[in-house]
Image (cartoon, rainbow, N blue to C red; front, side, top):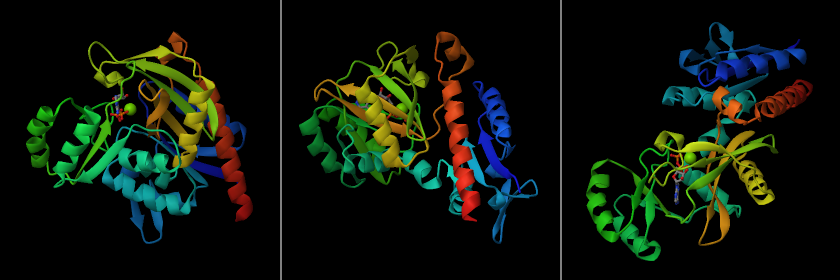
Amino acid sequence: MGRKIGMWLYNNGGGDKIQKRLIKKLKEREIKVVPNINLRYAIAKNGHIIHDGRKLDKLDLFLSYNAGEQTQYQMFLYQALSRVVPMINSYDSFALTEDKFQTSFLLRQHGVATPDFKLCHRDDGEQLKMIMKKWSKMVYKPTDGWGGVGLTKIESEATLDTLLPFLNQMDLRFFYVEKFLKYDNTDFRVDIVDGQFVGCYGRKAGGSDWRTNVTSGGSVFLREPNDEVVALAKKAAAVCGTDIAGVDIIYDQEKEAYVVLEVNGIPAFATPEQEKMGLDFNQKKIDLIVEMIDRKTTKNKKEK
Ligand SMILES: Nc1ncnc2c1ncn2[C@@H]1O[C@H](COP(=O)(O)OP(=O)(O)O)[C@@H](O)[C@H]1O
Ligand SMILES: [Mg+2]
């Protein structure tokens, strides 16, 4: 029996074209693709997960690459499916990267530099006051956010005092804060697939904002990484167990070292506009993903 994999890839920003290219390349290796499998429309029935009349647990692999919407329901089925079918990324690594605290904690355990951070219980606001004395500036971060949304820079103890009552009202379970790093308001986004370097670009914060996210007014620019940045990204991807990763890195001017801000489990391919700008890693990324899928499904067939 031939190999068959499932796929759920984002459609916007040129994702539809990338999907077509992936499907074509996989077909050349006699790997069939069932596209557009949104777990939102799947159901679990006894020992099977069914989508559009198909048992997803019979697939040889599932590529989940859609950041748009991952509801609790989708994550729930992702977790179950990942136990029985190889998934890219695995549920465990994806869930890990969805959480900034869990990611930073694991990275630091493995000696990967990150901004200093602290997590404390919501009733332990005193901890924040203590750390504020030491750090002088910090960033409050929702652990599951993206696009720079909800990040709050706390520049003085007075700001913290005004902010705490609001945070307390928000029904949070905990506070996650990072030392605010002095950096040049640019970052590196380094894509890693299957442990290999794929491509890199930079982002620069816009205007007076300190966040580099495009959604916060930042802009993308061509940027060559150096060996140190690539090695750091590879290590971060390996520690997180992500087959595909986009690692965000900035240079801490005080420590004079590169640090990992976060690992993205669904890093976007270059958009058509970015390709025109000269971001040319899409082909390499597609090739490496196809190669990895081929290897993972071959191995799996032999084991059965
Ligand atoms: N500790 C920090 N010190 C200084 N700037 C930071 C720090 N953490 C994040 N930033 C800035 O904020 C942006 C968003 O932070 P990040 O942790 O990547 O969250 P998001 O998931 O919202 O992108 C980063 O790209 C960086 O520009
Ligand atoms: Mg980010």
